[in-house]
Length: 441
Ligand SMILES: NC(=O)c1ccc[n+]([C@@H]2O[C@H](COP(=O)([O-])OP(=O)(O)OC[C@H]3O[C@@H](n4cnc5c(N)ncnc54)[C@H](O)[C@@H]3O)[C@@H](O)[C@H]2O)c1
Image (cartoon, rainbow, N blue to C red; front, side, top):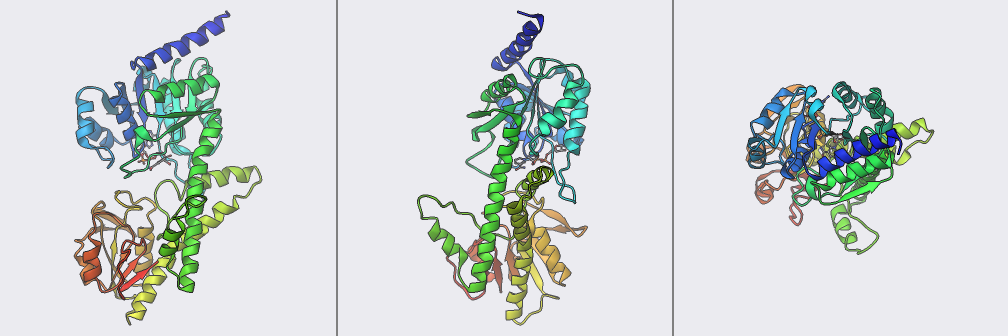
């Protein structure tokens, strides 16, 4: 056996043994909706986990056992911190002591719809300063195919360490669905692909310690593409059903009833639902990572562009519906009081990133309406640079029109239906309630 092979076996074997015995020191970079639940799962599995974040307020709260992520209860976090299994820091020099790192930093779009790689690049620059042999690095941030091997690998290999021999690099798409009571980090199958076969195997072994099912794939590019297929599939089907909703509206058919009946087909149909527009960190953004990449290869992502356009029209469609509903009640939008129920981008969560509610409120405000809102998950927000606080749901009764934008379970829809003068329901939250004051999408 050559000396190089001996080193190969040694680095891989030592790390694999640390992972199997759960003595590997695990690091998670970026403690948000994705990173904090992941850190908690590995700490629960018995590893010593260190979370690294650039926001001191976040690391301080983790160290105080105080969760700021809705899916993680403080009562689950605090014992892990107390027992020393989980700690958080802003100091990247801890990388020296770590065996594994999962990178879970944001990947937004620039205004031009180009990928913003700055968070991945800056975290990898920090990691590279303290990087050492025998480490496993897994990128989890959603990104375009090629990022792991083209952007991350050169930053880590520059220190003379060879991937697949001295260290191991993978991509694993994060599929967490905040607010989903059934599927969470531990029981969502985890796809992982490495730069080399040895990397994939190390990634598989790592996740198998804490998560229920691991799905290895042949490369980082396949793993990166898996996530983009999943989210593009969703975005395009939502675009399709939004277009169908606008068609049904024009020809006077209840789209919700159509979907409900179509969904009784036991094969070949999967229901998607229309709504006020796309929100969140993933569905409105991720497909544009793919279209940006394929444009460079000379392929225009036409489905993505079209669905993006239709979904982007939905807040305008809702605002027009509100305007027509008010006009039918002989009221102009200008000067009317409009109360929005739910501002998070989807039900039962507190996230307003990219939320269509913000667009709808702004458009209505620009047309001269006075806006209030209720959301038990979002106590305050900024609209057009101005701070707003959530009002009591009872405010709905005083409004000229109530717009149901997010169908949180906490709202008493029956009470709203009874007390409101006029309701525009963009989520079919008032399913089965027939009244002349209810206008549906
Ligand atoms: N939120 C979701 O539902 C979801 C689902 C699947 C995939 N994703 C993807 O996962 C990634 C993370 O998303 P998220 O929702 O957890 O984001 P988030 O904004 O909730 O959390 C990201 C964290 O990273 C920290 N951070 C930023 N720059 C950093 C740096 N240089 N070093 C260390 N920490 C840094 C931020 O302070 C923040 O705490 C994104 O690529 C996103 O597209 C998110």
